[in-house]
Structures are given as C-alpha cells and as structure tokens.
Length: 260
Ligand code: NAD
Image (tube, rainbow, N blue to C red; front, side):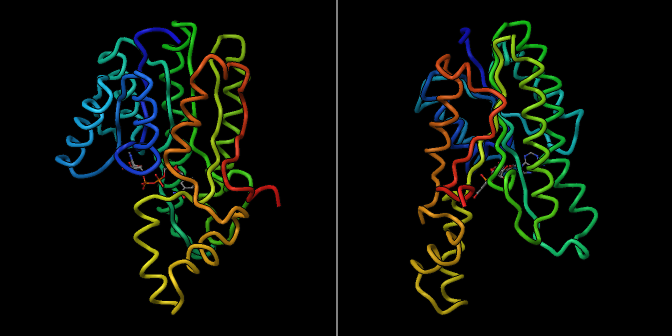
C-alpha cells in the first residue's frame, strides 16, 4: 500500500460505513467521511475518529444522487490527502412496496444512490489509483445481490447491478494492482435494527429474543446478526497486499443465508 494512504467511504456518518471508517483508521489510513446527518453530530464523529486513531479525517457532504457533487468528493479527497487509494461505496437506502405500487421516484432514488453513485465514484477515483499503481475498491452490496426478496424490487435490482459493476471494473484493472470486490452482508446489527426490536416484540406479542431469531434472522442460518466491526475488519483485510488476488469477488458475509 502506498504512503500516505487515504480512503473515501460514502455513507459513513452511521452504521456500516462508520464501522468501516473506524477499522480502516485503526490501520493508520486517513479517512474522507461522507453522508447525511446533523452537522454537529458528524463533527463529533469526525473528531472522535481523529482522536481515537491519530489519522486525518475530513468530511464531505456530497449527495449520492448528484454526479457533480460526487466528482467534487473524489477531488476533495485527493486535495486533502494527496491520493485516493481506497474507495468504499457504501451509501444506500431501502424502500419496501409491491412492484406494481412501487413509487417511480423511489425507484429512481434507490438506483441513483445504491448503484449509479458507485459508477460515478469509480469513474473519478480510478485515474488516481491507476496513476499511483495501487488501489482498492470495495462495494457494499448485500445478500440481495445474490438472492431476491419480495417487495424490494429497486434494492434487489440495484444490488445485483453492483455485483455486475464490481466484476466488470475488476476485469478492466486486473493487471494494474487495483482490486474491486463486493461485500454482501445479511442482516447487520446497526442502531436502526436494534431500535426496531422492542417495537416489533410489542406489536407481535412475542419476546425480543423471538423477534431476533424468528422474524429478523429467519433467513440467516447462524441466527446471529453480522456486526459492523466484522464488516470493517473484512474490508480492512481486502485493503492489504495479502488480498491482492481477491478481485471481482462477490463475497457473502451473511451467516450462511445464500448457502440455502
Ligand atoms: P445506514 O442508514 O446506517 O447508513 C447509510 C448511510 O448512507 C448513512 O451515512 C447515510 O447518511 C448515507 N446516505 C443515505 N443517502 C445518502 C445520499 N443521498 N448521499 C450521501 N449519503 C447518503 O445504513 P447501513 O445499514 O449502515 O447500510 C450501509 C450499506 O450497507 C447500504 O448500502 C446497505 O444497503 C448495505 N447493507 C445493509 C444491511 C443491514 O442489515 N443494515 C445489510 C446488507 C447490506
């Protein structure tokens, strides 16, 4: 890995993106945070990572539906740290509805954030990686890049698209010391998920443990949530030189879900 190292992580103001930011920062990698949220809270997060790991951490608020802002995010990373060595495409949203009732604007928004933004970030980041002769691209896909669920047409289509983009980019840069992979989590323990448990238990009249095992983790044979720390450590490994022959891979991390 060249020095100094810099990673840009889309959607890293919370959840999985933040977990990956902390794991990469723990390896001494400078971080460009991105995402939506309360400005004061984001600033606390930014300073917290700087203090915990002694790396440079910047924030750029590019909206992943805006190609011009995405171009600026990559340019700002290069300006801040002198290189764009690692790109993690993580920003994502969900909407659940039957396909014949699925709002067209939601479809467009999910395709823009969950799929097209990854094209735009890669489009702008790759020239920097090619010039440096080293790069790592990690796309946060989902078990839904490999399996479908009803009522998630846009999400499943976007995540399958991410898998195709991952393989294509990997082939294009295979001889240039740049890898491109997709991590496919199942259900991940995030504050969003944790906050739903008590409500669901109350609504269904079952215990919180039953909500976790029989409702949320129905598809996940291990009956355990994936943690953001596990995903962060997996991403950090993919950024090492030991992982240079892992490329174009669609990597499940879903407690055995897609083995069925
Ligand atoms: P989250 O809601 O905690 O985080 C999403 C991040 O994306 C936030 O930082 C948010 O600000 C950002 N974001 C949303 N819209 C944006 C926009 N227009 N521009 C810029 N940033 C935007 O969600 P999460 O669970 O951490 O999910 C992260 C990724 O992991 C997503 O791609 C999601 O599809 C994927 N994933 C999540 C799970 C899970 O169980 N949580 C499972 C599989 C895959």
